[in-house]
Amino acid sequence: MKFLRTYIEISNICNLQCSFCPEVERDNKILQVEQFRKILKEVLPHTEQICLHLMGEPLAHPDFKQILEICEEEGAVIHLTTNGTLLAKYGFDTFLKSKAIRQINFSIHSYKDNFPGQDIRPYLYDILQFSKEALTEAPDLYINYRLWNLLENTESKQENKDIIDHVSDFFQMPINERVHVGHRKSKNITGRIYFHFDSRFKWPDYNDPENGSKGFCHALSQQIGIHADGTVVPCCFDKEAGIPLGNVLNQSFDSILNSPRLINMREGFKNHLLVEELCRKCTYIKRFDKKLRPENAPT
Image (cartoon, rainbow, N blue to C red; front, side):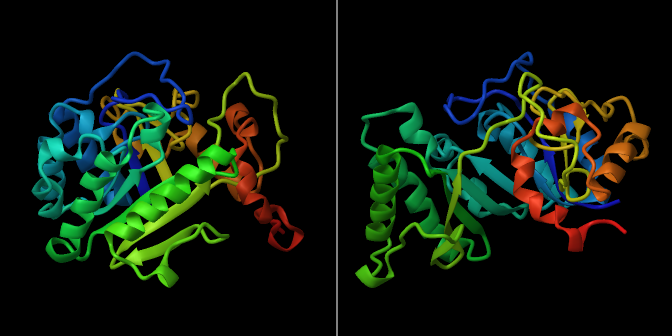
């Protein structure tokens, strides 16, 4: 079994608290360096990409540089998602010279969510200057500016427009090439730098109403998650380990992949059945409703 990506939560602690990201109810946990090495070695044969988060801000990990060095030593392909506020702390070369990092996603909308009324330009400048250096120092690095607050209020739309204008001005893009929010989720700015647009989503909760037993998800076929305490979960939305599938710190990853609960879930998704209660309460899963059309139904 090989996943497109595996989420390894190196820390569930974040230096910000965004309104669109729920608070973690679990105890604060930081994955120790040698624990990370053990987990990485176990999962690498089963995944194409590693994401260094599930909850938490990966750059807030006290040994982030060591984590990154281990990824390089083991030949891991890293997709890094960060709010970007700690970027300058490490120096740009930490990321630009890394042999492991293939993509960095900046959650641009996090700044205004935490610091309303403050000038966003100093925050943006670090990210934009980093991106500009990446164009020459690491041209193969993909960079996404995430604006995942579409379809909200007028203020959010104006904030997005201001951000888009700041970015366009920084890269001195001609007025007819400026980026505007449309129906496309991804829009190239220059090189391998992109805007990525999406609407806000809600993490599922056991207190939510059920949406039905029919559905499809890419969990356990394209992705799997591991919390900072080693607990394996089916996807990045299971933030409180409501569906624990095992613990990779005291079990082999292979044995967990062959556990009855995991197999039951995976087979359920293949047959468009949501066998776990949390999945039946997940609204994000509705994005895959096209899989339930008759022409795609199992025979």
